[in-house]
Image (cartoon, rainbow, N blue to C red):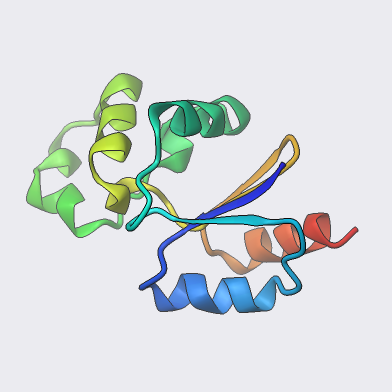
Length: 117
């Protein structure tokens, strides 16, 4: 399976999707217009190893909700990701049994390489 969870309104996600072209056989899911299911989030966690790896502490809601004051548990992180798409570190690129999380140059390059081999 080749799938990319992204935010269609995010300029960084748009730039990365353009960089990863061609996206033959890749399923794109805009997490704002098509909410992630519990099963999808659990599958991501299984490959990533933790919900913390998938969780974005840069989201505005993170501070607004006071989450920076106490470290949420893995279960709480999972629920937060399911409740609001902004908590997912984006984009999340899944290629078979590999996962690439976030937008760092290193991660994007590794995803591009895995996608086009």
